[in-house]
Amino acid sequence: MWLLIAFIAVPLIEIGLFIQVGGLIGLFPTLAIVLVTAVLGTWLVRTQGAMALGELRTSFSDLRDPTEPLVHGAMILFAGALLLTPGFFTDAVGFAFLVPSIRQAAYRALRARVNVQSFGTPGQGRSQGPSHTNRQSDVIDADYHEIVEGAPSDNGPSGWTKH
Image 1 (cartoon, rainbow, N blue to C red):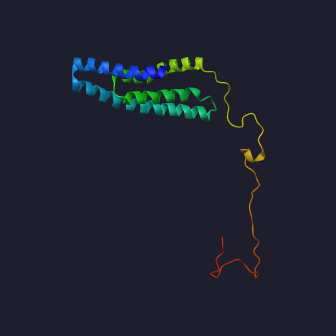
Image 2: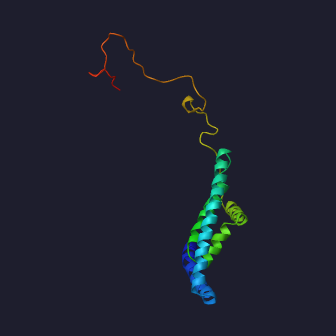
Image 3: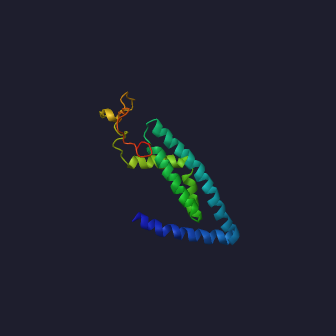
């Protein structure tokens, strides 16, 4: 139900804001603002997205819970979609999601509503067989063929070995 309300309310808000702003400053300045916010938003999303990806990689390499960097990345992606959508309301919400403190507050609000049972890496706490160990082994598994001089061989008429 909330999604239906959003799909109805957001376009109505955008149309109303376009009419108000366009009436105050004119058509071309209004269009210029929409284009500038799209370009600026794209640049901000790109830089903050790269930072969020770096934090995600760090959490994976340190074997920490990647939930927070993933949520921040999702919010930055959502902000990018909003900033590319023409409109003043969507731009305002998109720029808000690019502010780290607002993302942090939204993350805390989401975390309070969602209960994570556990987090772990595959195989953590379980005994794994020898084929899944990370240490190197001295055993080499191979097939061999003994070559005896003067014995008939599988070589073709050219003398080259068949593989």
